[in-house]
Length: 363
Image (tube, rainbow, N blue to C red; front, top):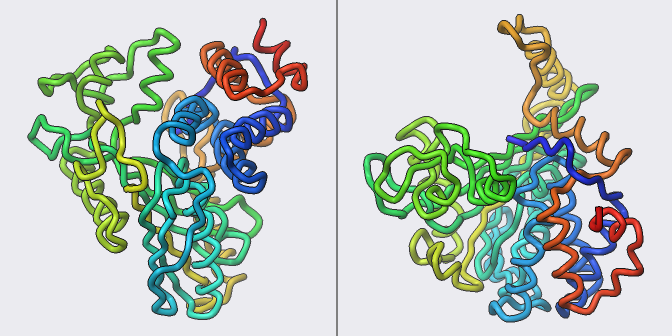
């Protein structure tokens, strides 16, 4: 699900990307790694997924400077079975290890038809669609998942034992936009709840429980409490499965081994899983894309319920939002703008080099 930030101050995409890249360079990252990390966050904001966007910059600065993450970490393949890889992220930011792994599985899937990689020695990796979507340009289906700090209880419990462990899937289409799904197995995420807290909004019902397992719409009680799974017991089961794929295939930390919300994650213990499926290993690519187009058009042509103007395929709203935000700028709320400017100045960025951004931040 994406969040609408109508009324937020709009920041030009190129300027935001340049600023965030420079911030991460000031944290001792290489230019290429800083640009990749910045691009992953701006991509999320472009898609309207502000919980995984530049809101994360102050948190990432702490990770890279005093939080134990290696800003110059270099991922490497530590186990190679042809179509199956284990990759060690060298305690780099998760985006660095996940991008490395995604490119390797796309290369291997071109040869073997299917390829997958488990990643260990990593950290927070952002939005899963950023990686799954890379496969589409190669005529492949992309799949990506990651572990996360425990914020959910097993169904019927009140202890934080399960992460929300999101899944991203991207499927190529022909004339239509690709199908792209990226969601956690909770009704929300702590990033989204933080945004609601910033805005002073109550949470939608069904997002969270307090520490005693009672439903709450109070963001503070939700952060102290539990996230609710989607689909009841099915959501907790799927979160468990994604956690196993993300951690136990590569030897990364699972569940409570990763850390907790109070003390934060243990650096270099995150795990991820990414896979690519080359469509032409199974079916003619044009035929496949045409059939996917047909499935998407069925969705578009479905009779809508009362009050619904149009039905969208998964990922379609995000593509439309990307086009709008590239043309008009990304809307960011005042808290995020202030936090971002403060973070930039803390690491020595000269904000006078970003006049549009400073002008927007001062409004």
